[in-house]
Length: 136
Ligand SMILES: [Zn+2]
Image 1 (cartoon, rainbow, N blue to C red):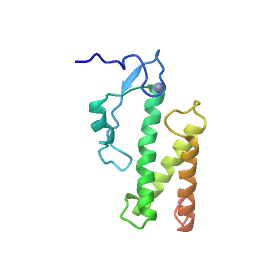
Image 2: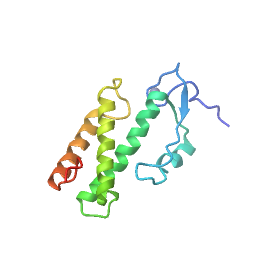
Image 3: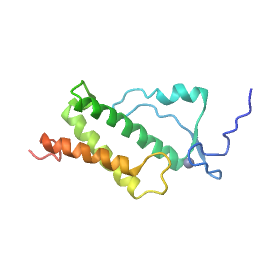
């Protein structure tokens, strides 16, 4: 057994004097089991400080929504085919966008610009199709 060398240090930002959480992401935005990390995590446990675990949570949702949105645009079956889910996903990205914009800097996990870009694309898509702010 090798001694754990991650103790006391956030795997993301490298902060040392912080409470660390072993990250378990559970389910993604579409309520699917999120296994990407756990499979990898078994090999290499990850510990994150509070801020990084929150960002990690955001990143999981941003990734899931971005992937489903790509499928939607490609005309493939997507979780975002459902209008209600699409609106909910857009709201989630908008909320994340607001949070990362006013959050700490530098962001080590999520790039605020990427979130803003995804939100812009979702907005354009919604506008073109009359989805959106509950109007009509
Ligand atoms: Zn951290």
